[in-house]
Image (cartoon, rainbow, N blue to C red; front, side):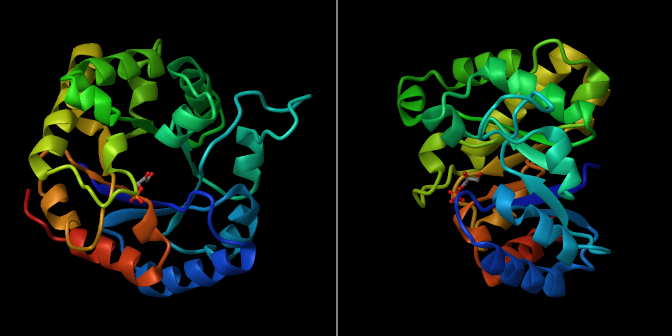
Length: 255
Ligand code: 13P
């Protein structure tokens, strides 16, 4: 049985002060939650302050991106050792917003996964189709291409250390959640791709989150699906009450 993982992707939101306020509330409400892994992913600037608040907490901390070199002349970039040093254990890689607006490709995603793993950070690797892909019946092709490019050359042992997030781009920030059937269909496809590449036991151990307009009132039906192992939450992770409610509503849901 895979343990669910619910992560909040704060995107480009929260000053250090606001971030500390939010995580202090989450820590009060969720610090004893052990049945699901809870992670917050603030902007880089707030990592250090938040990690101080989360000392001894069950809540995990993640960054939203990284660069694959450890150090050097790469103005504006942040490396895996720096993220680690700031107190994080996770890093989101290949989010669709980075693919759309910042030139992220499957090849750079692959390099970033390797850098994260080399420094003991758990990558949360995002895949997902655009609306025009879905409408053209190309969802499966897009996921297969992203899968083979992003995870190229990774061993079963390496794959077991990461989390995958399926985020249909058309469902992000739009209020349009994929139906539980649409989400499960793609999660099952990803599980099949994992099985074909690395065998059943590896495939069964890897957690696949769903992301895209996850809210307190839809988390339970999503997480009830056999291949949905958690959520990557955007907008609803920016307020303590909605994120806490998502975590609580995910608990005890029969698969
Ligand atoms: P929303 O929950 O705001 O749709 O964002 C989803 C997302 O992109 C999480 O990474």
